[in-house]
Length: 273
Image (cartoon, rainbow, N blue to C red; front, side):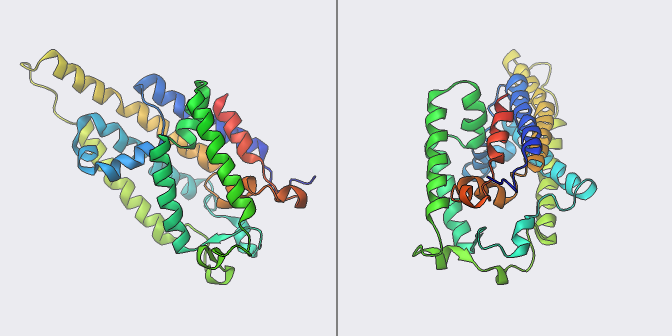
């Protein structure tokens, strides 16, 4: 069996960086690296996330994550976030339509909220702690992903609405516009995080609980920055930012054609180790 798209070394390295990121956040901050939970706080409770001192580490994490990615694609590999397979018009790699992104985003958001976690929270942190709930969650969303990717073909009745043709894709993402938007968001998050880090310390008359809370909130910022930088480098290095890598694993029909890509297994393994 030919595995022409399999990249085990980068998968293991990237997965190890992701695992180290999760360990950093858990050991130094006592927080679980759950990407879906972290991002949902900016949607569900944006005011609290942006103003509550106990939430400042999330701003630091977001800023460091985006800025690390920006530096990586600027100084190391400008094509790191581009899916090179999409540029060849391969019919085996689907291109999601705008409607598919909307529906998919809703289902992912609803599912991660209902399941209380995603691939990082359950797949890396949960499995590493030998959580039975996380094992069930991982098996559930992986099985659903395999069925969806393997069963949905051009004959699927929803295909005309959820897929775009290669002729409509002028450039591979990310474009200069999306990179600029990401940089602006990262800069705003960094500004908010810095203001929280420089927040005035409690007055001498403050209670011990107030002083401890200030110290604890401030202490979380530096580890969150290192964790986010490791997380970003892990995702980019492993190729998990490229849609064809994910689809290549979930579409088990590729086993017979030599296009199956088990890199995700190496990423998960590296993260757990």
